[in-house]
Image 1: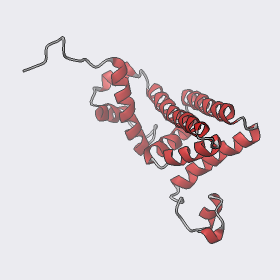
Image 2: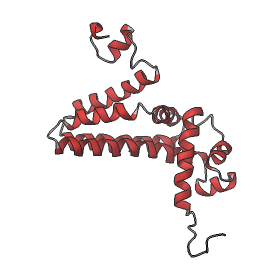
Image 3: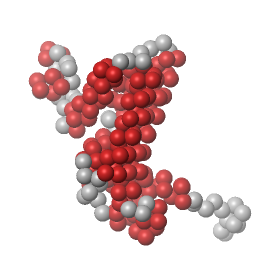
Length: 189
């Protein structure tokens, strides 16, 4: 027996957009923005290719939305880490650093970030979205820590270095170069 029209919940475009973005995150993480045909995203989302383009008129629009979602996830994790740290009387910058280490342990998020940076080099819309996302994160770090620009810059630079170390699989490596990048004493490796 089918549910009546009154009890059936129809999928709205916004719910569909969210499902498509989830699928796009998975597919783009594996193949990159430029290497992924939109047909693959539509297939992964369980929608028609035509409907994908109703939700995201261009592939660039889809890439922008994925980059924005990635930055929003980082921003949310940082804001939550700051709130917890402040409530516990702990250092919010250290809490954000730990939150970031946890975030990039998610291989998919790490790959999306790296693909977003690569796409930003060639797609002005992705570049603008990524710059805006970074701006919000930098502003959050500055606001929540009160740290000077140099310290905030080092914090963000450390995060970018963490991306490289994670992408190279060097988080647990005892190789001297990996220890250096992780700023660990050689005898601790």
